[in-house]
Image 1 (cartoon, rainbow, N blue to C red):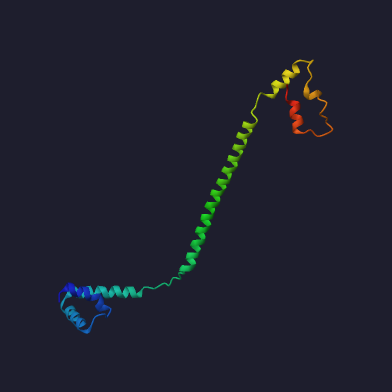
Image 2: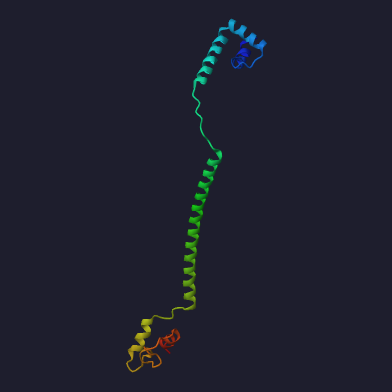
Length: 155
């Protein structure tokens, strides 16, 4: 038997995994070969060091850890969805306000400034101001928007 073959079997020899014939052959080789004996001693010391180590039992519950992770991801994704919904709602509000102003300016275009109307009406003292002298509007009763519109519009 050569040294390479013996060195490959040394771990199995230490763990008593070989049959009696191979164990006998390895023992005979170890008595005659100092290199393999040195390798055998190193493996024995390594095994004794490893057996002296304390084994710490860690309690690991896969199901509970998985449940914690799922809950964390659900909370995190809910926050992201809430942020997206908030931006979406805010965008919709701004869009509705914009559409309101556009429709308002389309339906009720500004014809001219109100200051011009009053100054032209008030320039001639002989002309009656329709707002001031209209007899159909009384301050005792509420005025509808239609009455006010017909009074303010100048001919």
